Length: 394
Image (cartoon, rainbow, N blue to C red; front, side, top):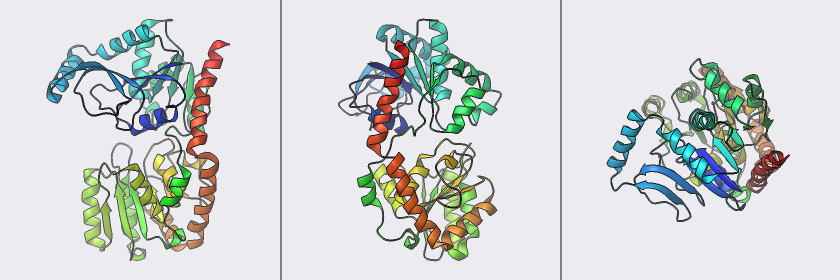
């Protein structure tokens, strides 16, 4: 099968999805949905179709088609000019590739960049377009579908694609509400599963209630609410003697707030450096009693699944579809993303109830064995494409 994937080439989520199908015998081509984006170092066994680009080191199994430029600045300047004077050049390039490559399937990972781009190309090519799978990431529909700028484009993309996939049952209902009438593919995490024997080695021995670290997801932006998490932690300072706070993916304002928090409370805060390996992030969850993630919108948060698998007690904003994985008050606690008082109460419960966090770790590990094993999810990804091809021939 010849598969054309349109996605963010620098995204770890793209790399993890492609890794699931790397040994399935597919001929995989990747068209970056954002020009000038780098190729993620974990991407393997694909042909990447670029425009003008600056060559960088990549895995030898990755082949790049495009126009190499000896200067990074030069490549950026050329793409800047193209974007400003020929704003449709990416759609035209993708249309040419579809006509030349004649893929069996086109699969977009993410909607606002990849999905809109393919919508434009399919509209231009008319009926001469392969079956299209649209995969929903994060806030693609749940948040942006409620905005005037995006709702018409979302409706148009959902009306045009043939297959829809996502990782939340919530988003299946939303897609249908926005006009999707095609085939809904099985719901499972977009980023693959975990090597569970390896994960088991990364979990700190002993009861989770004996761990003395709290993980905080450090995003503070259009969706992330890490500052609310810091405020809630500050309100719990009386319970945090002997604890350390580990903040990952910290944005600059969160880094500043974390320093002030530490000075005000005397509690150790460590910023996990950008670029830290995924294995080390998993290890940090495996050393944590609690993992706190707050945002106003998400699909199934990968960090939530990491926390559950590594034994850390998850406190997660209800705006993700965490309720499809957690039993609130048993295997985790769901909270509003903007209310530090409610988050404080959840933290206090998890900090004082050893039985709660220890029991949750056992139940979440059982769930991971049933639904998050990497080998099982890789098989689901292969079946995913087989189902599409089977329906295409009917």
